[in-house]
Length: 52
Image (cartoon, rainbow, N blue to C red):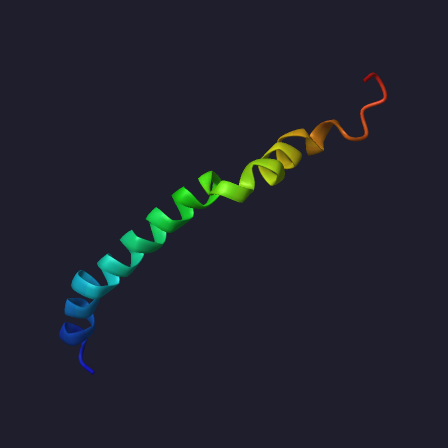
């Protein structure tokens, strides 16, 4: 493969792949079963707090 072949691949399929991956990663926390895990992650900093 030459540089131009790799550049054309990155401009088309690489960009499409990165766009789809971005959308999946953005949507992942909003899926149906993620509410409990998100709540747990939001409160993890307070677990060892002695002043409840």
